[in-house]
Image (cartoon, rainbow, N blue to C red; front, side, top):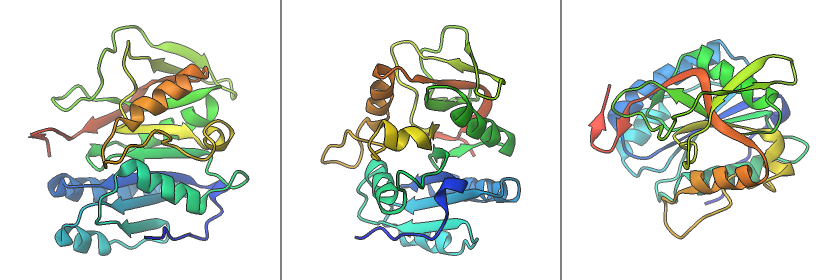
Length: 237
């Protein structure tokens, strides 16, 4: 299936990706919550790619309409990493890439202030790598081994940002931001370079490790609070 292209000036947009598979009950909470961010962030484009063959989910998603909302149905389920890579390859270019790229699984909720803080951090922190949201400490919290105090980094703007670096663990790929600048300059235009022949693979681990080896700063952004609503058999709605 060919990934369509869209006529945005991507260099002036913030792009938020969310890839759907299963979890219809949390999707029905996530979608209206994330759509409200359009009212507050006027350069936000939301790209939702549906990897689930369930026609009920597809029918639900087709009801959504907004000039900066993109919906793509890929019911063969080739995985989050591949569909995001394909969209990026079809739409972004080295001279036309969003300053901030956000990836959020459709079981994560956050206020618009959190999203704004993330956008600011990935574009302002020198050598910003994989920047994760700082999760509410509920039963679905994906953060692990966050034992040490946050480190403070002075941004290009002079503002200060604080990151918690997990010990011997990658930043969870559940919800994170990354600078569009490093997408081409460092990653060669391929966000998830480590792929295997199955839909789900620890792509977030390899992205974190790759950027860490190149001296980028990965970590959870202090104050950028988000709530993870689903983990395994646990669902919080």
